[in-house]
Every structure is written in C-alpha cells, then in structure tokens.
Image (cartoon, rainbow, N blue to C red; front, side, top):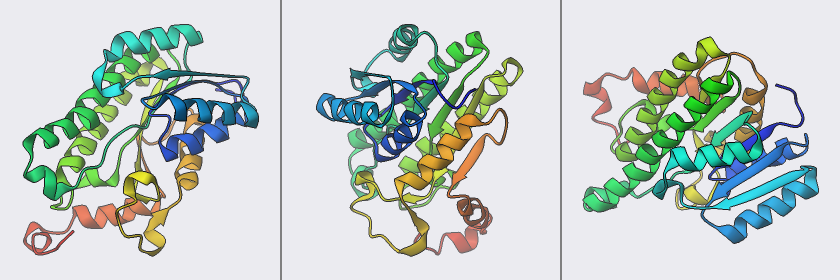
Length: 251
C-alpha cells in the first residue's frame, strides 16, 4: 500500500484518536469517508483534513450502532471505489458501578461496543476478502485482556472484539488483506475526561495515531498491537497474577 492516495473509511471519525490519525493520513493526500453521529463535527473535521492536504473528504452522519452495517459499508466502499484502510474507532465508556445497577445500560454498552462493532468488522472482512487487499484496524483496549471489577463489562466487549479481529486476521491471511486490533492503555480523550490522569501511563491521542498509521503501512506483523508498546509488558503481568492475589486488589 503506497503512502499516498489511500482510500480510507473511518467509523467513529469524531473520536480524538481517529481525528489525530486522519490528520496524518490527510498530509499524505488520502481520500476519506468519515462516519459518525455528529454531522456538524464531521463537517468541521472534513474541512480541516482538506486544509491539511486531503483531496477528497466525504461525510456520512449516522449512528453505527443502529444501522445495517453490511448494507451501509457496501454502499460506502462502492462510492469510494474500494478501500485501503478501514478504521473502526467508535465506542462508549460507562461507569461500571452504574451499569451494575442498570441492566438496560449494560446491554446498550454491549450493543454499541461489541454487537454493532462486530457487525461492521464482519462486513469489512467480506469486502477485504473479495478485494484481496486492504486492512481493517480496530481500536480495542487493554481492558479486554483481563476481567477487572472496575470495568469488566466494557472489558468483555473489547476482549471479545479482539478475539473476533484475531479470527478475521486468520481468515484474511491467505488473501493478502489484514486485520489488526490496536490496544491502547489510558489515553487523554473526552471519553476519559472523568478519570484522574496519573503520570506516564497516560498517552496523547497523537501517540496512538502514529502507531495506527504505521500499522496501516505494514504488509505483515502482529494482530494485536499495544499502544504505547509498554502496555504489553504491563498486561502480561496483570494477566499472570494468581486469582488468589488478584481478587484482593482494587484494579
């Protein structure tokens, strides 16, 4: 895949990480279709990407969690003449304590973060398999590596999504297309604004964006990429703490 002229579809294009990544691609004259709920915010981002260097930015205002992913993505990709990168960046983060007391809210989170995301991933897999090229990049989370009392419903969604992407990557491997899950740790975004920021574990969206952009250029590599990379070591430790010890922690 060349560094310029990519055809890129971003689902959840108004997220901080997606916007930062799009700016990198726009500087390489990528062409975009941006998808998100907030039409005004989409148009503002589109204008900025064109100012940075993109020759074409189109927007689609819809709620990714409430539409027919297969039909929508087919139409989007057809209008772009194919796709080189599909970035799935949308999701929601609820307060774990609240959703433990509200099953409807828990199910809504699961619908958005896993069920609908899985539908878009499967739709993307079919398109990439037919093209025999391109890459699906899904923003997951280190929260999916082990169930923890602080965010286990959110973590279950991200863990399931990571496993789905791993299977899609296996499916696509013979075709030359790829699928990758990016696993950020703490990132300074509006979604995490309510969480106290504590030191070096927190990354800027631009740091994760550079990892995503680099991943899009590679022809091979790991299916799961931690962002920043030190999170791989942290999660190895967390995954291997014995339950007898782990259950005494407040993680």
